[in-house]
Length: 511
Image (cartoon, rainbow, N blue to C red; front, side):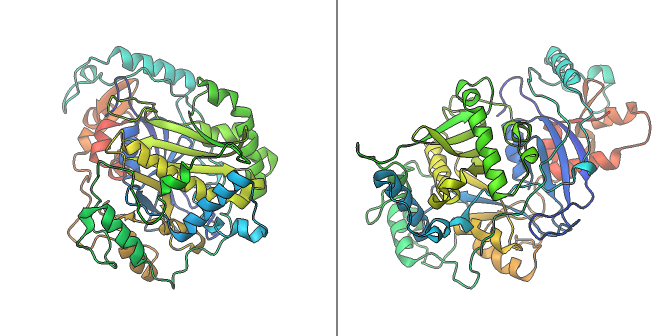
């Protein structure tokens, strides 16, 4: 998957001491593993998030599910099979009326009635900065390292038992920057009531009948059945609803010449080398500060340009393009919402081989009456479906973490059909089957097959790739050459967390 010259370089920090939780407000209940990604291929990151990892800037973390106060389960939506609910359509119609005739809700509550579904309003990491590890690779050292790795690109792949001189392998030509690990302190998510657990989770029979007409594969399912397998990709990716408007009908509705407002959604790569990104940086950073101070009550020095850059612009993902991939390529992007020539919202997303991953959303609080959280999520779902027409494997929309123990964070389950990642087998299960388990215990294994374990379990520690003294080598060679106390327990923990496949492909930096 990775293009020539792309590779992943990581520093692993292991499990951290307990930090403050932004969901339950526990002072030290938030526990996670952490890595600093100097550079990361999109395929490696895809595999990592499918094992429960998630990035915040260049910091990649995985909650310690058995121990953390609020277990965070990776959630994804099958974009093609998504059907907007009545609440979703209410938001879409509200936006259309505003654009066409300038209609604004008469009541303030009308503008906030859907904000409990503000799908990217939380800052995902809560860490005590004073307790964070620091990157040990300087920027100059990383540049030199990339040059040397590039020079040895054609070297033979090291095998167990090789001498260190035979272990020069890897690829280079990176422009990744090194930085100290600084993670934004998490503020509390926006208040909201969350999903009503007393209401039935099934869709309406009318919606299911419409879906049957659209997808012959689902003819034999009843109106109460859940999807038990991953949905089949269908070539015609735009549902043609006969009785009501589809998501695309709302999103791409033609605007009359006399429209009161014009909304344009621009996709720009996160790079100062891109003209549109660079030219809009100051306005985008100012909007971020306004949002953080208004919604999350940050102080000005907590949301300045440097914090904005570190949190939402610095990305370890290496941009990639493929002949059979989307025209935009893969990597990190900002989806900018321009209203009458002014940026009013920005959705930060990663485009990966199998999904669009939502990172964050910030918007102008003056336009909260338009429910920008819900509207941007629907836009991103429609965008995922559009990308799937070019890259058939790109069929899911990842919404970050689902936190059932925090009622205000259950809104993500309202986007269906969604699946949660089993924290033990790393398989996907329909959320309808997971919720009863989470009602009984905040931590749960979702796979009902007790014999089904981690399909990518680390079994050969010696094959883990190590980057040591500017040389790529398997762990067996590194172990023989290492001076000082053994770090085998740390390397083993890392390999178990990322899985055998990634451990053999990514480079773990060791001093």
